[in-house]
Length: 96
Image 1 (cartoon, rainbow, N blue to C red):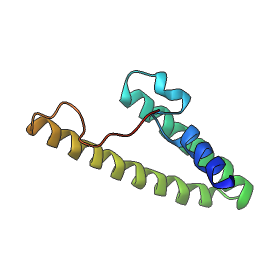
Image 2 (image 1 turned 45 degrees about the vertical axis):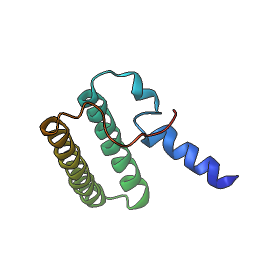
Image 3 (image 1 turned 180 degrees about the horizontal axis):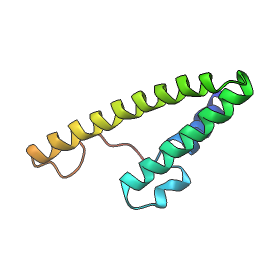
């Protein structure tokens, strides 16, 4: 029961196909909004936990590296789909 709640809460915030940002048609704009929110929450937690700008800097750099890795991965998949003339991903994400 608690596990289901945690998974639902996670998907409601972090899953771009389920959170309220899914209504933004442009994936790049949706991604940018999520990135801005990530920076905002990094700043909030850094200030609350460490009361330090240094903690925010470390967290912000970590977020940038993570987001860059995700962008490179998605770009790689898109190039693959284009080169193989695949219109949809092969994996079904399941019902929303």
